Length: 163
Ligand SMILES: Nc1ccn([C@@H]2O[C@H](COP(=O)(O)O)[C@@H](O)[C@H]2O)c(=O)n1
Ligand SMILES: C[C@@]1(CO)OP(=O)(O)OP(=O)(O)OC[C@H]1O
Image 1 (spheres, rainbow, N blue to C red):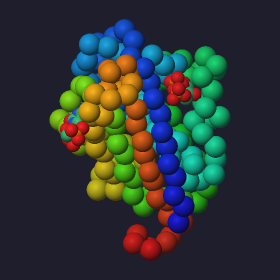
Image 2 (image 1 turned 60 degrees about the vertical axis):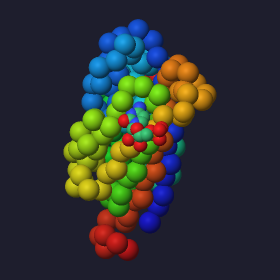
Image 3 (image 1 turned 120 degrees about the vertical axis):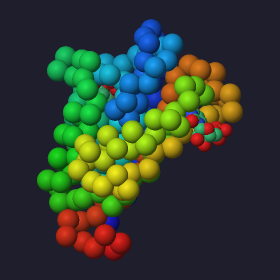
Image 4 (image 1 turned 90 degrees about the horizontal axis):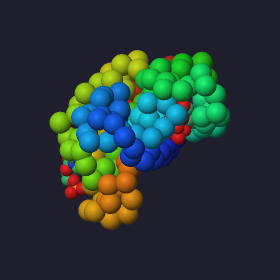
């Protein structure tokens, strides 16, 4: 078994929606980013890469490379899932938290979990997505941006589910 942790932050800029967990959430700002700025999927990518010992998202998709300008982070996640499979691992479970003062994310977390499950090729029960405010404290609490954390457990392909 291998454990991985991912963390990402994106600040707000102009726009009318936020991409979070592969879902376009209507909002009065967008994210400033090289890609679509999907802070949750970036944290998930980093958790998977970390568990495999494969570095981080910036190593695989440099933000200086025009190939990733405006990239759909679901495509990045599918690529990372493929790397994990090729390294001989499958996802045991994944748990993620989005730190956002606003918008309200509870109505979207089930859809986010479904999209992540689809991209990882696992059952939706394997994925848990939740949200918290930071009680108006810090940069998320001041509404300057959003952070996300993810923890993943990878199993050796062929190992029992609860091993
Ligand atoms: N952006 C957010 C933040 C939180 N929620 C939901 O509200 C619950 C309470 O949040 P606290 O920060 O007061 O713990 C939290 O458990 C989420 O269900 C949300 O939907 N969107
Ligand atoms: C995803 C990548 C690549 O487009 O860029 P951003 O969208 O800026 O995201 P970030 O989490 O800052 O870094 C990873 C990047 O390399």
